[in-house]
Image (cartoon, rainbow, N blue to C red):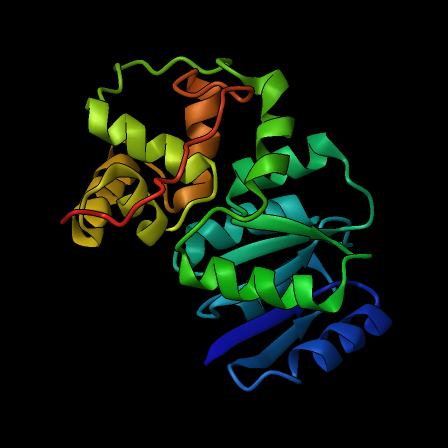
Length: 223
């Protein structure tokens, strides 16, 4: 069961989210919040928080950052009215695992909750690459981050939204091997999840937002 907290200052929005999510047996709404401070308090220990960016007392960006500090296992999906790249990038840097638009279809909201909870792929990788463009290479680490060639391959596939199974098929390795590489990549980048790894990689210049994506093999994996 995926335990979800809804954070938005409009009761009507929260009621709509509740109606959509309650239709699915694997999702349970366990709390609501009308401002950022309530979102942090209610979100600690939850699996996923749907977080509006513009809220009173504490905005969604600050609430996301505080929740990431207090409850690292909780995944935040930022929900925005407009596709503002700067706001979305700020949310991702604050620790959000992804974002959806308030006008998105109901099934997209449900898919977002399930995907960030599974931690098996980056949510909306195409949008992430687009908004990463202006931020490419802006951060330089004090200590060089050394990834092996294989880890860099895995990182590129992560940034393109591939799951562990898809990466394994692309690189002709086992899923367990991919999991090991993913763990090493997250550790070296100091990232709490795959989305944060992609954000860090773009900022550090390890990946190029406009680079071509990985290609899936035509045949079965030979392991």
